[in-house]
Structure formats: C-alpha cells, structure tokens
Length: 346
Image (cartoon, rainbow, N blue to C red; front, side):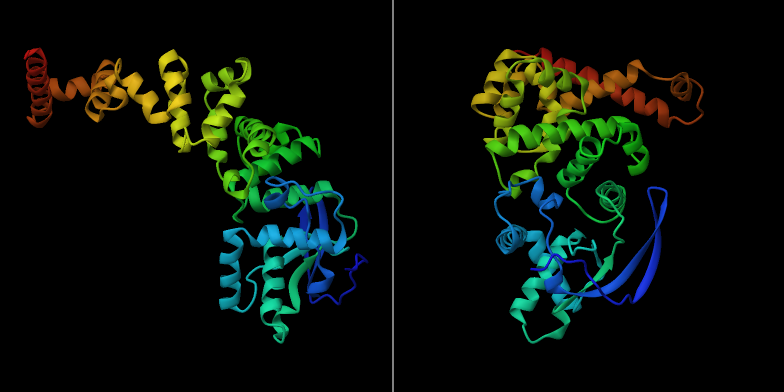
C-alpha cells in the first residue's frame, strides 16, 4: 500500500481554527487503497498490543481484524450499508493515515469486499488535513471531537486520549481541563484511572470487553479515602485489579461502597474470597442500613431531622393548614409503634 502523499482534486475547502491557527481542510473522495489505518487509534492502542515488527499490509490486516471484532464496528457496518454511505467524512493526513474514522474505513473495506462491483465502496469521503499539521494539533482536534464533543468514544478511550495529551504532548492538566471543558480534578482522575487500568489491569485481563470496565477505576479515584488506600497500601492495586478480573466486583457502582469494606477486616476478607455480596452481608451484621431499605431511609431521615431548618419548623408551628402537623404526628406515631415492636421478645 502506497504511503506517498495523496494528490486529489478538492471538492470543498473548509477552514477551521486549530490551536490558534487557521487551517484549510480539503473535502475529497479518496480511493480506499490510498487510506491506511492508524495503529495509534485509541480503540486499538489502549486495549491491545500491536507488534512493532509488523509493517505494511500485515499490520493493516491485523488492525482491520481487531477493529472488525468490535461489535460496535459491525453495528456501524449495518448502518452505513442501509444509508449507502457515510454521514460524516473521515479525517486523513497527507500521507493517507486516518486521523479520525478508522472504524468507518474498516466498514468501507468490508463493504467493498462484500460488494466488489459497487462503485460507492471504492472511494471513501474524507477531509484532508494540510501537511504542516503535527501530532500535537491532531491530538487537540481529536480531544475536541471525541472528549469534549458529541462524537462517541468509550469512557476508556476518552481517558486514554486525555492521558496521551498530558504524557505525550506535555499539555498541563489546567490546559487540558480548559480545552476539553472539564474540571482539573476530573482530568486528574481520568489520567490516574487510565494509567492504572492500562498498566495493571489489561496486561492481566486483556481484551476489548475488559476495556469497558473503566468505570470501576474512575470510581476508585473519585473518592479521597479510596485514592489514599490504593496509593498508600502495599498490594492494593493488585487486589483491586483481581476483584474486577475475577468478578468479585461485577458492577462499577459497587466501588462506591468500598470505603466501609476496606475498613472492616472481615468484610475485606469476604470480598476477596466470595465477592461483594458476601462483604455486604458481613457489614450488615453490624449496620443493617447497608442491606435494608427501611434502615437506610431511617438513617437518612435522622440526618435530615438533625439538619432541619427553622423554616421547616415554622411550617408546623404556625401553618394554618393541618397537613404539616399531620405529617409530623404520623411520623411520630409510626416511630413509636416500630420501637414497641422492636422491644417485643420471643
């Protein structure tokens, strides 16, 4: 496959502003054979390892196979087939490397393979970047499109791009936060969560399906007690990774309850040997609010009553309506009745 600079007659020339620079982008229909997949595509680079010994057609075939194995890409295939074309053009460098739209490129290759006589699949609609656009500008462009913008990347892919902007292109977290319209703390959480997942989890539990468990790691770095635990406790990272990899934690939301589990030695042991439900049962022996909706609501109501505002008290004291007083009286009566029931023995 040729890697020479693409020459094509522009259909339309658009102008965009990128990193403070006005850039002209040509809209062209490129012969599919002039377009090459990018091994740095986040859907690939962040989930599997591509051997750097593979080059040319061998590398392209492997990249195509990896992307085609993704169910989302097969769904896209059906959408493009029904629509008989792309809704949005891919973005390509002058040498033919796809900057944005690797999945759409694979779809066109598969459509051409299935329908070799159909002319519509022999060229792919593209937007051609000028030759002087560097990797940093491309990273900023993709961040605008896929992290801050409406185009869909998975949470893990978005975090990987934030990580790359920070580590590969030396953008400070404050700048990333402004460019991608998120808080600096969010940027920091994404970078740390991605780093741990990429370095610790995926090498041990590889595969595209496992890359979709990024929410577990994001939740881990949201709460200060968990951040402190995982960064200061020897072996905590490996323990957390194995909880996810072996299904001891099977929902990302369960990570929010880890602070109480890691503080209880028995609950921690139950989590490691049996799973989240077992750890919750251990905690429930001392705190029924963990598993009982009634006790949880009682705890919430107790806290709310302690923080009652004068305005709420006055509604009972001074209101002409009897509704406020009725609510308070019924609560008092229900609580008295429950206390009596709890005091019954045998």
